[in-house]
Image 1 (tube, rainbow, N blue to C red):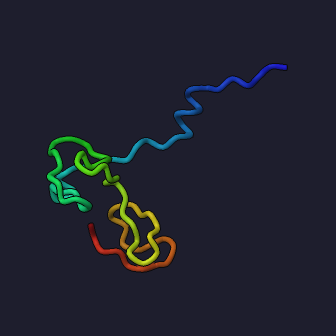
Image 2: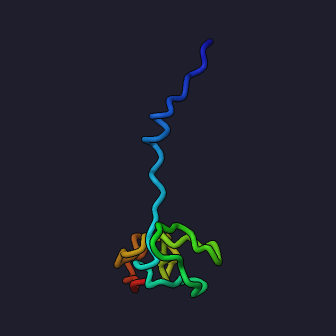
Image 3: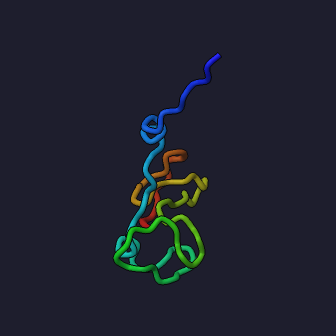
Amino acid sequence: MRSPVSSPSLQQTMSAPPRSTTAEALGGRCRYCNGTLPSGRRLTFCPHCGQNLTVQHCPACNTELEVGWKFCTTCGRGVADA
């Protein structure tokens, strides 16, 4: 019996590209540790505390939300801008 062959192009299309943001978009500081973020490059994680900078959490139910969303997708609560 032959085993299925995994196609690299199929794997690439199935996985989403990593999200990133910039220090300028975040106000120059990490919202978790207040560390200064390096400018002029794309960021996914804070170099000081390691937190993911491309998501935020709902203050009511802790659902992971993308930065910039105005309302929680789970409970509907308004989310303050990060």
